Length: 123
Image 1 (cartoon, rainbow, N blue to C red):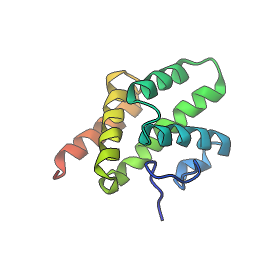
Image 2: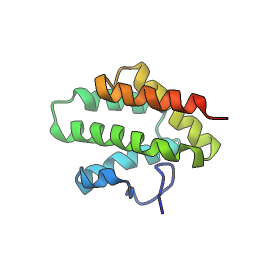
Image 3: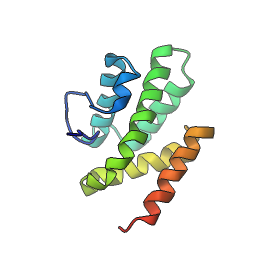
Image 4: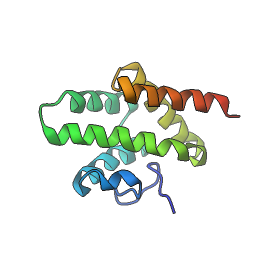
């Protein structure tokens, strides 16, 4: 059974990315999503944090950024199962990541493909 980022699961997701990042990185990355979905963290705060982590000289923060982007992309396929409020938050975060150029090159291409795919689907 898949546990989405929008659901509480003690900060642990069963997504395949958990094999690429250490458990503590996964837990911290997922905790930020949980805080966003529970409205303890705004989208703007998430974007600012992701921007800081992306440009950070600390390896841990860069890893958290990469893990969060990876998890968001993996989670895309489960968006249709999200409750409306969480889907709206995820959509705004997704768009904000593109708008603020937090993804480039290959990851930008993946993000844009996800957006185009979503636009082709019925509401």
